[in-house]
Image 1 (cartoon, rainbow, N blue to C red):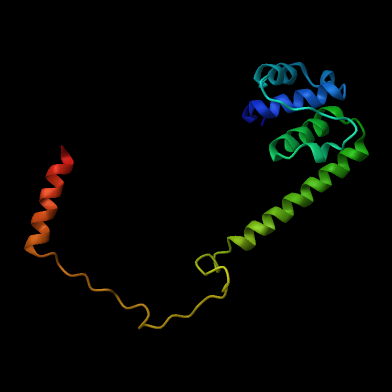
Image 2 (tube, helix red, strand yellow):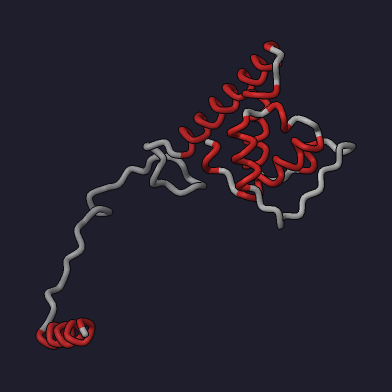
Length: 149
């Protein structure tokens, strides 16, 4: 997971962790990765008086921060278990939404009408294709010649 983080996210994480004096609690390889990959041109100011959730709008930064908190910073087993349960519940909800959204019975129906439609033989009749005449064949060959060059 740590290899896929954007440089802007690394910069935000670096600033937040430094402001909260939590950066030293991360393992050395994570610290080095964040320091090397961070975008120093990114403008982000963290205010300790405003809740973190209101300051970070992008999902990637929130995910990485929650992962780092759960894995390396948090030492309380109760809080860790509460977070794990919440993540599990969120994943179950997300999978249920995906299951409903991409249900194979409703996949090809319109959004407004999710019921499976019954078609008759008249609705499903084959369309008869006409054979191309001599002029359309000749034009097709000429187009092929010009498109090759």
